[in-house]
Amino acid sequence: MDDRRTASSTRGWAIAYALLVLALLAAGNAGAQTPPRDAPRDLDDLVARVMRAFEVPGISVAVVKDDAVVVAKGYGVRKLGEPAAVDARTLFGIASNTKVFTATALGLLVEEGKLRWDAPVIDYLPSFQMWDPYVTREMTIRDLLVHRSGLGLGAGDLLWWPPSTYDRKEIARRLRFIKPATSFRSAYAYDNVLYLVAGEVIETVSGRSWEEFVSSRILAKVGMTSSNVKHSAAAQPGNVAAPHARVDGKVRPIQPFDSDNTNPAGGVNTCADDIAKWLRVLVNEGRLADGSQLFSAATWRQISTTVTPLPNGAPPPELPALKSNSRGYALGLEARDFRGYKVLTHTGGLPGYVSRVLLVPELKLGVAVLTNQESGEAFDTIAWAVADYYAGGPQTSWLEGFEKMSARETAALVESERKTTAARNAASKPSLPLAQYAGVYRDAWYGDVAIANEGGKLVIRFTKTPALVGDLEPWQYDTFVAKWRDRELRADAFVTFSLNPDGSIDQAKLRAVSSSTDFSYDFQDLLLRPLPAGNSKQ
Image (cartoon, rainbow, N blue to C red; front, side, top):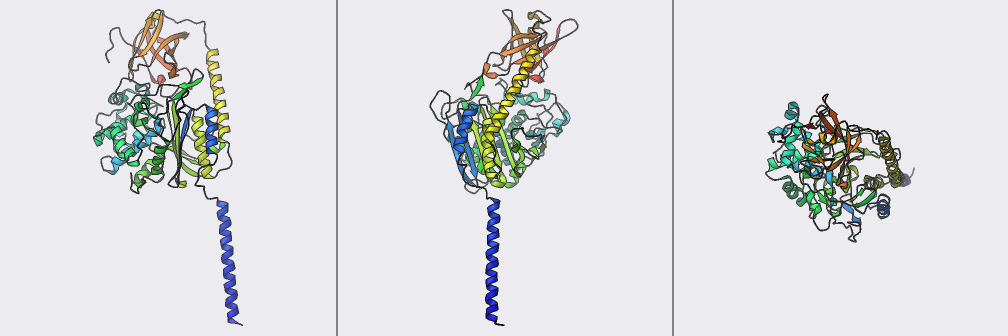
């Protein structure tokens, strides 16, 4: 046998085998469809259609992929009726998307050894107190961020929403008078007031207000040079998107929420350029553009790890792609799955501003959609369409799905209100002369509510909330409707009086008229007791 020929044949077989392996690998890679890096080609068209469909005047979109900013852009106008366009530096209130900034601030203090995630809050705020002494002793810094305190949904929000005359410390002090809705750490119920307490912890431990700490230790280091940390800044002139809402059936500009009491829960105003920088930090586990760390990877694991399980119901029937296998709340972020990937996300809502931030760490993807109109369907259509593009999911018509979902929910709301009106006994009369309902009523945690007889009509005034002034119109029996004179509130409430056997008033309770009322109007938690005449000291 010719050894040279055998060697030649062996080399030829090896080359052929190598070529076959390369071909198979190429075919496999082609089937895997490497996630794209560029922005979706139809993004501008999608945003334009969303703005038309949901009547949104202005939107900002930021997309970060693989440590690169692929989109930072504004669309539409800052204010209806005015020509100023939204650009990449137009500011929007991001509301509860601020919460992860507060969690990050606490994480920085933990890194410095000034805090421990699982230390009791009273170690740092000795005056802190909840209704239950056990909860007061056991509530930790971590518990402030994860909505499992036992408080009900939005409990205590009326202490600051609409803007009240209470300061931050007094709001925190009044938590001790709010009865829990569930036992400690047994259930999820979203709250804002404990983030206010977290802000107080930051101030006490660092010696700087929450605003100063977040501005200098986070915004400045990230390079968010156009952003700020105060609700009140949304009312200042400059490149700021005006908030809009549907009032009496028509979308129009409304007054911005301008109270700084709860900045730690929702005070950041930012723009597409700046939030893109923040997204880069988050998807890179705390790494800044210059390669240094804003916070450690260990802190990011704390922030992004689920603590409180969330109910995981079926997705809207119009949007089966939103099916998830698990949901939970981490520290200022919700964790869920989508198309087989872990997603960290949050929404934000203020009068006239709603937004979503969405992170897919495995894809190094960050998305933010900021709007100046109260349409969650608008920001969700864009955010999930972008996430789907990078995740490589099957074709989904997100806009069509959210339009159908919105139509169904609107129809259900109209039907609910129709049934409420149909069940009313309009011929019934109040048990007492109107003047006998007048007086000062007190709730243990909110304070005083005054009802006055003015010209033969009842007027209700929340003494610590200037905007909550309304005319009490008889509804049926001893129930009235408080129609707030400021119609931008969109939160009319039933006021029902209960009588003692002798015909005197025992108590009054409130409930929102419409199920669409923002949960921060936690009227249902009030128990108003009449005060003896002349006794109005709190």
